[in-house]
Image (spheres, rainbow, N blue to C red):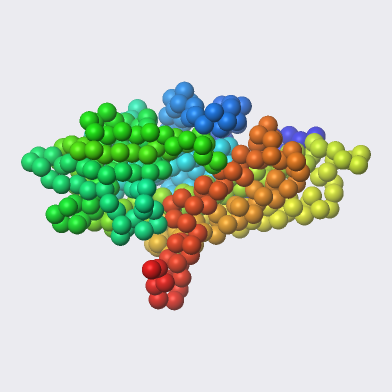
Length: 393
């Protein structure tokens, strides 16, 4: 009864905000996810492995660092960048997270904080996905308070820097070629950024085991034991934690879009299921309570997507604030949690089977809900903006 081509969650036609070329690229991303990712992703989710054989096909899409100007990148709008994150997440949130780490956090760190020479050295190869990036900020004992509590240290030693410490939850780190590491200078207390190359002596990355969410993403625990990094690999324009905050502000909108995509994926699978599943002699999509769940889901998706679209427009105009990005991240992830839960509810017991896909979105939503700033921290950022009073301890 259902037809993939007739099922859409873009109820207000937000794709129409894109020009023809951008819309065509978005559709190529959708086709890639439908044809190459969906048939295999449950197997990789179960095994907690990343399908690295798909990286060349992802590279051909040309979407790494899509909003970066120059250096082999497309230089397209933040709106397209966000919609691509949404489309990737609709197919699988782990794939979207992988690209967000590589094309957003890692490439964004070099783009915002690197010298012209560093950008020329690394970004073109990263745009072609010949070099994969990771972003090392969070630590075992410091997540939300990492701005104040960063314990990884760096110290100058001649023409090099020596890094010591640990990082945790670092996506892509066990196989990335370049890992951005943020560390505190023991002499000046400034937070500095470094590009650490895979295989550098003293650098180890061990994947975390037994995650219940984003199992396809390889999150590593990094140990830095006397890691020597040349001065030429220090991000030359990163002079304080503010540089890190600039990177996170740029990518936080993408996480909000990814939450919308996670919701859309769960909704579209639930709608397709409702059209095919029969109970009491008729398709369940004809039941009032099922339609009520579908409309609730669609309302959440549409409101969140519209918020993200406006946020991306503000980002493109250069006027987006921390508070605006934080509101979108907090709101969209809350609505995502509701939506994937309703999708599972609609499917009954079948909703917990991976073969029906929705269970994967339910689990993965828990990670999206927390990374790039928890709901509580993003709420306090917005609260500070609207009241003028900081409630962050």
